[in-house]
Length: 258
Length: 258
Image (cartoon, rainbow over all chains, first blue to last red; front, side):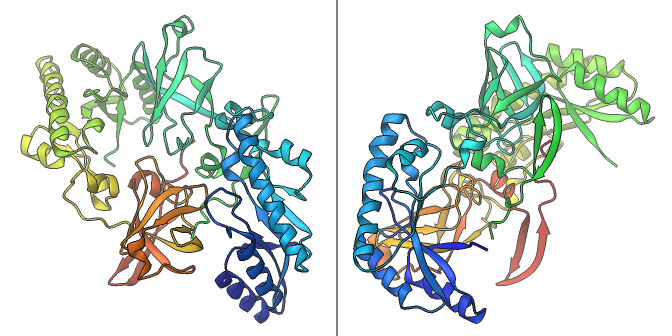
């Protein structure tokens, strides 16, 4: 299987190589470069080269490429995406040049995301694009102008209608995450998701919505604000086409955080 | 079994009563009063009385009490808790008086939480306290001065150490929620949880921590900022006493958001 692991330090190389030697396999490695995101990844060519040389000198592992994910350039307006992605990819290009000058082949250059996918494709530096959110999208990426359609929706029931201006649905923070802002109610003009409590979603109902009133028991649809953390809350995804349920997919990787 | 359902509208009463009559049971109901929290619940005595009268006139349901949870008074400094809880409980007392004047017995008055538990006990109005977070606690309740010990911790491994001032652990927003601020690293002076990405936790390492260095592979312990939403991310809780694992509990209700 084409399994690759990402490393940015000698300890990880040693741990993976030790395990690989016991099992008599060779694990393909990518070195993570911090492309100005400020999270994980080696921060310059010198550190990258030292790690590449270590991998070359270590049995059980093989260097196949670099991983440079510009996370800070993804969920942003287009001008900001370009402004942040250009220096990020320039840095990645510098590092790969240094490594190739020192005899490392580096066939794989992986990075990019839903926000920068089209500019990364134009640039032609990366050999693999890591865009994932594009498939289902969310409010944050849509507001940032990513050119893909929303395909992930949450259905929620109105459970309380205490005043004309106020409604409560049963989708709170255990159903819709708020790390990227509130979810968005669709198809109900004047109804806005204000905030989630643990179990409740508080909705504001503007006067314009009163003609087509929102009643307890009504089911509304919302677009989650952040696809990644929201799907992580759910055990299944329900696939619908033309109003019919076609498939129920388990969310196989949620809960695997040990 | 002593099952009780909370209602704040006629539609819910009708739905529950219809189902109860089919099964030839009587469901005990609590009317939710909005005790100035601004979420669900009937907003005044008039609405509460109308709903109580409806329940009395409906077969299959029985009114046993009122539910008035002052959520806005819980995770707050003590002065704010009192300032918000006093009018909330005064309102609840008013409503119950009105209902009793009209012949409704109202044996159960349920409300309160970890923040207001001691002042609610002193007041003596409630017959049931809904405190739950007190059992495991979190950063938010501890910072608000709730008089209980933290008993919920998250273990996470340092996976990257790109610069002296920066470390990354494997507990991001899929492991620790950030709706109530960042988690808190314990036992590592100078190491601070800055923010969670989907899968990464970004840590700031202050110079003071450098003497006892933080290395890749080290396991740190953190206190979650919000117990409710964090436990909802996990499939199991691991019970530890004196450094030994004694029990593994499944989180039975997570994922039940349909």
